[in-house]
Length: 129
Length: 129
DNA sequence: AATTTAAATGTTATAATATAACACTATGTA
DNA sequence: TACATAGTGTTATATTATAACATTTAAATT
Picture: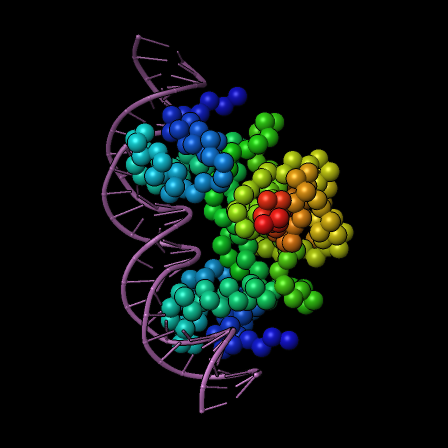
């Protein structure tokens, strides 16, 4: 099991505690009291955390959330639901979905090693508003 | 059928002719001879073209490609394959996949109105290299 | 323990992506 | 005509992300 470095741990902790995806500069702002001063320090930690699967990037939002799936070592098969009203993001952990997508082959015969899926809609709360 | 405005048409044409996804500032550079001078002119056209489904944004690349699916009026269900070596991007048009994803419901009972899926791997050419 | 190597850090500067705000113009339609 | 809607042009600025280089820490090897 990979041991996080100081900066990686600081940045993982703040993302992990956040109820919503965090953007890089919001992370930076929040960790300045811990001595992390420059964007690059944040981005380097983010890159590593994504690489080892501790966090995921929500591409459509340029934001990061902690992985909700304890067994997820590497970010190879990710799916999220995103509420377009309140921006709540949830990681989807559905074995039928992941099986279907991991086995998917297109006509061109391309073999995929990774996918990322983002669903958009209204969450329950926002639907009833 | 929606009629494109002058700027929208110029920007659609250049994306449509491109064999690969185009980034906003690359588009800007290429249309400056046509009188489009500012980023905002490009982004406004891009926004509209995405909205009406003439182009799609490849979120992981911040780049845009013309829709390959003539019947696609709105970008509600998009899937792409992306070669991580040569960066070739292909729109996937597979009815089994789109049916599966359009009918997908998560545990939280959230009903989705849209999705975007990006597969990553090596295309045939790059596999044999 | 000393050496060496890889990974991480700190820092400044800058590149790349995207939007705010405001004035104006074209187009459709009541 | 008058009104509403969509599109344009422009300047300035916000946001997201990386390049380059020097230094430090941690880990692996001798």
